[in-house]
Length: 483
Image (cartoon, rainbow, N blue to C red; front, side):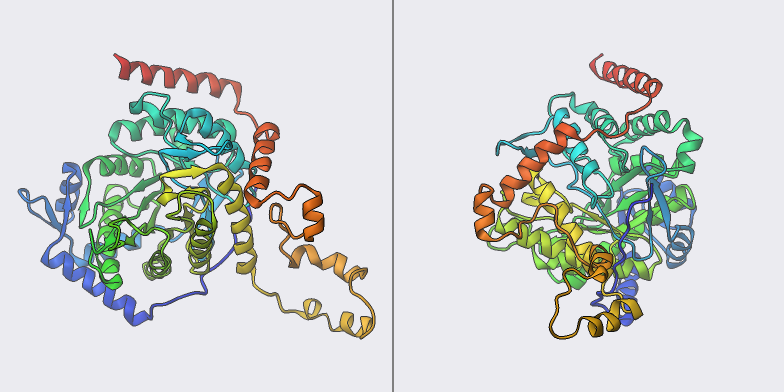
């Protein structure tokens, strides 16, 4: 079951000489300052590889040859597999994949309430995303507040797997949590060796800006490297707050943070799949808030996709974020700009493309459906205009001539589905027809469709023996936290 993987990458804003200067500036930052690495085993890996490690300040200065060698070892492409291993995503080149908002603490539910997320929300949202043809990957869509905080990742992963066959995130905050998710995936995949062969957990490490790799996330990253599970390195640098106010300065600092993580993964386990990522933005100087829906985020995504290709690495950006609190006009404006820019730039993995509100602190059921439509429209743009003898339609134009219609033509019937975007949610009826059907706005249509999908969509079930083993594992791990 191979999903459609649109191809982007035609939009670039940096010249090759600009990329060279960013790389050179990054190496200068390594020489003069380095990066602070909080995890002791990681510092030892750097030291053994020839980096200059200061035991007191925890600063690591990474030499140029170490960066070059790590980038060579990291694969330019890799596959990520779903629960059903026939559903796989190929990251690399200019292929574009859309995912959902990652681990918001709240949901905007179908009754319009903003509240804490639950395990039931994870199940329902996973079922929605499984049915959405334009979402390739399912993030941890909310943090359920109705289970113990120490093991929420276990319940979240299992809720997603029960309700979708698509690839999903893992969880690598701390060694214990990372190992737990590895064990769960091994149960599902049929053993650790099979998990290494067909990875299914996408780890995410956000370097702490400025210039730090945290202990907990790096603990998890080292475990994921052992089992060859892909790791995203994506700083959340804020221009004017945790990074320079200039966008070019953010790119240099971000590059230092990302490359440090990629070097570490390759030192831990050469050939581990990694993604070069960004979640960087600017500080709104009037309010002190981050501007995740701003145009600067689009610029960071385009430049980051270029830098990833510069190093021959797959890329991860953030494409559908909005600072709006509701799925309103602001949300549509900011999300559309972000997704389109990232996709045109050829960003391989566009996070936050579905359901994001208020900087992905909240995930909206209805906006998830609206964003699925948006991603479909963007994918149609990425396909471009196919020019060949058939599509130029000279014979058809001459046959129809100046006085007939193309509507009943066999040529139209043959080609329109391939050429035209056909919406599943947007309304194109006349006002009269729209009013006769109830005159509902887009939000109301999305809510109704979401209810129907949750009620009727049933993904392929998990095998009974896997269910028994997984539920036993979760019970045992939860019990350890309680004791």
